[in-house]
Image 1: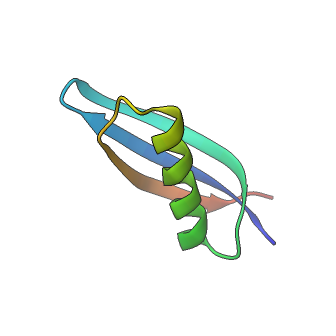
Image 2: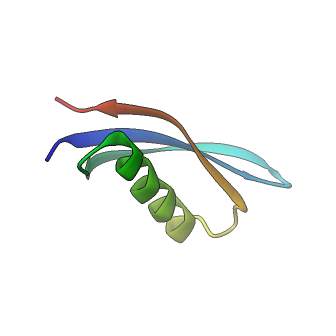
Length: 59
């Protein structure tokens, strides 16, 4: 299964942060994005919105 690096934009009324999740094992990029957004929501509960902005396969 390939590994992905996903950059997730996290937003709330106070502003925006960018967080990178590396080494996500998933069958495809869409599933990797879904897993990265779940992780971001769990680790950064102060944010209301999460959006994957870039996904790339790691070598």
